[in-house]
Length: 59
Image (cartoon, rainbow, N blue to C red; front, side, top):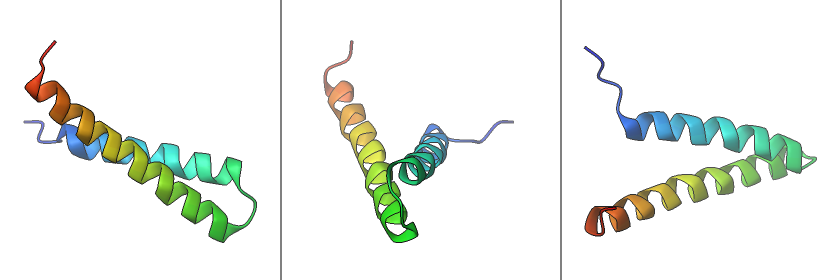
């Protein structure tokens, strides 16, 4: 039985995108980590907000 949640997979994907984005966009490791954290938070936050909006207004 597959027990992997959509939220876990979304966070894993957001983490991968954030790490690659941080490394490509900034030069120093400190800046890379900060940018990766911002990207991760933005992706997860936007997905959660959009999920709640679509819950109340289904398409």
